[in-house]
Image 1 (cartoon, rainbow, N blue to C red):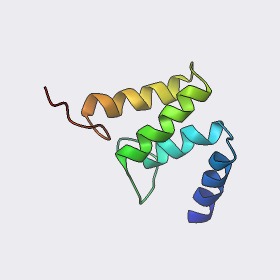
Image 2 (cartoon, rainbow, N blue to C red):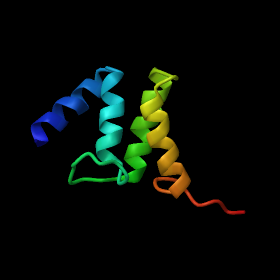
Image 3 (cartoon, helix red, strand yellow):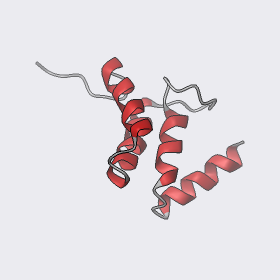
Image 4 (cartoon, rainbow, N blue to C red):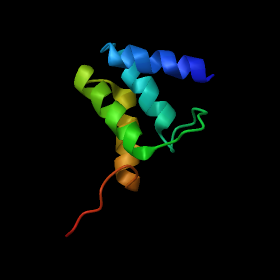
Length: 79
């Protein structure tokens, strides 16, 4: 299973856009994708890359919205 993730990471390093969404979903603590290294900050980073690559990607936008709404992977507001 880790080998597949390593290949996805390599694809993202080579700027293969579709890999960004999958990596973001794997990292997301709110995603139903099974992955042992959940990380909200990394999830937002990769989902943001996915949206920048394909702005109308409804899945990436939805996954980002869930994280932001719950405050996962975001910095707290000082206000």
